[in-house]
Image (cartoon, rainbow, N blue to C red; front, top):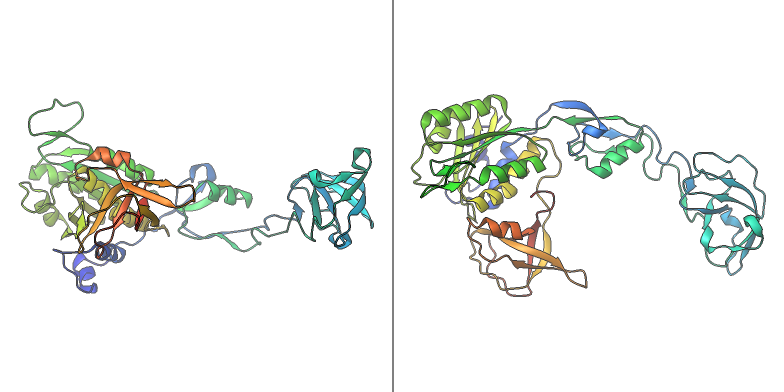
Length: 424
């Protein structure tokens, strides 16, 4: 396990007083290593978990050639260009019951979706496209040039072959992945245990819900957004409440969290010149770097360890907390839980308004992304971009990411957007 100083020494041009967003993510990539704590879970309990090992298919999927739709199975070799094909039905193949009869030239079998293809037959014509020449479908005609050999047939193992990797280690088990594992006949799957993450807010000006409002104080919103962000990520959350600016209380909170959690997240107390003890306690108890990041919002941040627990000291402003979490903490926690999906993909959208931006820092502006009739994406800001304006975060469905070297953006120019779906 590398120390903060060792990681910093590996980075070219590392400057904790002027660190780029890319520099932060490179630092965290080197600092954070995945846990190795696999557990076997039933599928119904595995949603959202990260695979601790590859899932190998024990069978072919599908296990046999079968029909992709309701229709009539025939020999594709009997199809002739420009000529209709007349056939006599000699049986019916139902899903789950293999049809064992014999099919001769000029004959077909009525077949249901998913039914095993009868021996010798390799093509299916949809039932709604045939012409009935006799009652009970005993004689049908396939129109000319409608089919080619192999149409509407699912091949044995076309989805997965026996012994093939179905899902790779590090994959998240979403609804589709659960269905895939179930299609292999596997009732359990090996996943990494949930991360246990503690969080608390700091400051004498922070009020818990239920306390009367007083002059100079604000109600704590950060714990609730962090609860939501961590829960969406699938973490086991430990809420330590509001910790006052008293050394003994801060020390107890840090020591308690570090003793049984994988990570600790604080909000507030990491800015330069703040009259509290949070930074001093972080230095006393842990191996911590304090950064000024070239970004907006969210310039101050602390990262390191207390004991074996990762530490993230986030700014106090509500929007800055959410932006730094999405940009840095979420990818780091995903890496810690062994996920292969770290940084969210950025989409291209065209700005509906001019955006002011100074080169030399990365800016995250709250935006509303929409789709036009031609399928392209458009984005506009939600208005006031102040780091304390939480209502504009609620109105947004993504962040406009204006990169470090980027300057002003004119109306109609493309910008990158980071969508919130699945995160907030």
